Length: 311
Image (cartoon, rainbow, N blue to C red; front, side, top):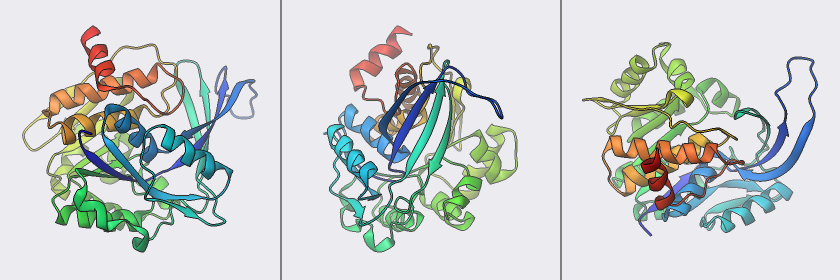
């Protein structure tokens, strides 16, 4: 294995509903396919890392319901270590309803359940943090995430914070602005979309907002903005790196950001590639995911590298 990554965050099952188009208000559409697939931002990143050859350790909390049982079995099938995954007796596993349409369009409804966001600091596996090469968090189970990040920083373990959902949504998940601010101070690399940066700063210019966040919280390795078809941007104290999105015919964009993050952690944190190389590799991982259905990408390093060479 090239390195060890501990991941805490959204662990979920996705009910994917494929349609011909996303209906308008009070509209109708026919569902062409309905399927239950494993998802959740943290577990998607874990599966991407495992496919790339890293040792991915998933922590977090699921219920002992049907969704939880299926989720755990698929996690193992994807090569992720589930030793530190907690099962809540009588709990409901986080699950989402994802409606997809041609061209990669989709929308997501989340049933938070009572498990994913309620892991406590006492349940956090602090004893293994020092053995890790990276800690990934997305602030689901914020109390446990902050405790793990404090321990990681104390032990000089890089912390990657992926703000998968903006602060306004995280408040609905019982994550406060104060907790988000603390995690921003603890992380060594921060990833968010444009809306996340806008809500953090009130600044509509994404690059200017990125610099505000970087300066305010002193994030060592810089901040990254994922912007879909516009590509990705990485701002550190010296430079702004840009990577255009690779031109592909999108089948399903669900989980593309998670595959991007997995590729980024693999290339930058574990392989120590420079920022431009890491950004390009991560973008390649996301592009491959967009050409496949489902929220997880299982591409290995050689597949991604070959794709980048071709384009």
